[in-house]
Image 1 (cartoon, rainbow, N blue to C red):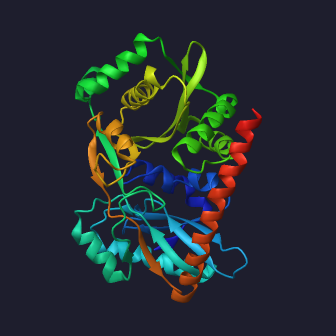
Image 2: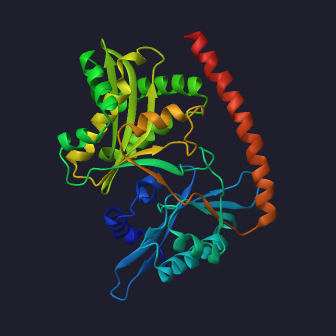
Image 3: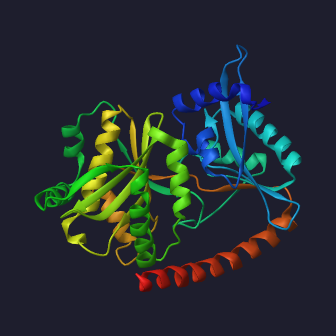
Length: 356
């Protein structure tokens, strides 16, 4: 077990990129995007000196307290049924926890919920599983749709979609909706539509500076797609390519012209990108685990389901708590802050829209 050194960054990135469990959230690049956090990583090598396991960790100090939080999004990257590797990586995590005085360590691994062996071993190591998490109440979504496109042509992938989804893609094309690959200069337009979406659907959006930083750091790994109707920008998405996968990361749509189905065409263009790259998986990201037509998030589920990806449930968020009393105190403070932040966000952005 080793704590990753800068001299090994290239080797680390090559390992994560090539691994079936590789994820952009485990990349050094993503650590740079998350500028409020410090990035560290633990690696495990075999007898030949080759990396066989890794876990990239984001570390952030709690404001006004002498403690830190540690979080490994979609880590670890390894054979998740290899207990020796998992144990070695966690020993490295403990060393970093001492170094940064961490009160908690969180993971939300790329492991399906039916892997009882992995879940059982993580519990043996002392991790607690976040139970009954059905909606977007964790950092990463527990439920996603994933489309296996390995070795398939565009025509073969299109045939996988439901007839209604194929129809809606044709509706967009019939109405002459056009999709263009945007540049960094188009991000302010995308962000304005994103704010409009957040106010409509009741979620807080990232500041424009965050998307600008993503573009600067991720480069060709990131694509902005913008949909236009009569030369008016009406919707946009951001996709990330890393290793053998493309992820649909952010989406925004105007309150106007939703009847011309730009979101279906945007998805198709991102999937086409994944096919052209020879990817194995196109990941639609999060949906609610409550599959009920009366649920407010059912529309999102129905939209993504139409592309006929695999409805995937991950194990969910797991935590190792180093300092229980601190954890209780910080959790209470976080809940109060989130409520306050949501109210202030709505007031601020509704005011901006009124001025416009």
